[in-house]
Length: 302
Ligand SMILES: O=C(O)CCC(=O)C(=O)O
Image (cartoon, rainbow, N blue to C red):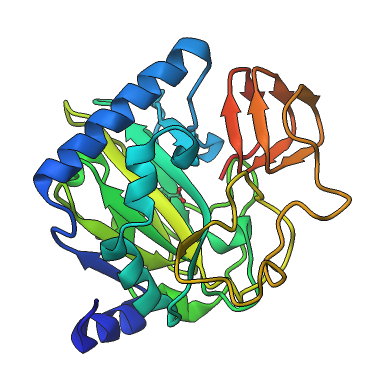
């Protein structure tokens, strides 16, 4: 649970860095699980998730390994996302005892060439009516500046939704929002960084000789409906804490006729949610879901 000072800091700044929420030993076990998972996935598919807009930050060819929605891959990581230490703080921040999963993303930024994220708000990827959505980035290993730690612009959540460039991942123009002008949230294994989906954030290149391993969990109040049915994914709507008082009516997932089917091969168009396994996606938008296998060319993956 948060102290009034911590809650006040969050409300003023739009983020909160909670030191040592998990022990270093727990973080080491999560890290091992995460790397084993990416190794398994890599054998059957590409797990590359670098935003095209990362090229605006660095000319170096960088890499970002990822897995969406780890609860379908690892029971240990499922237990992590329902852990009361995590969800209790999420509840305090959201202002509701009920915390619902939107999606989660495991990221490994490989040594020496770990991809950056240009500055952005997360809201354009999955806008919600009440803006209750928050991210929690759980650090499985230390994330000093050299590893491309997450960076935030304190107080930027108060600006409300900002217009973003949409090519290569929703992001803000680099000349107006340079990564260096933000606050670097250097972290240690077991730390968790919470921030609003309106808080401007990003991260630099991992130029160190160690991987940076994190799990990002997006959570919302189950009574906060999506403003648009985008970025749907398998597992969305899972209750991480408390109950859904609307019994699934406020935040429906995958019930609209225009929801694209899961799986198969998609060439062009939009795949919103679901699992794409072993296909090829060329020139579309994949919002949420798991892409295991195949090639994604020219799309957006948030
Ligand atoms: O993990 C990071 O460095 C930032 C991730 C991020 O900004 C995002 O996925 O929206």
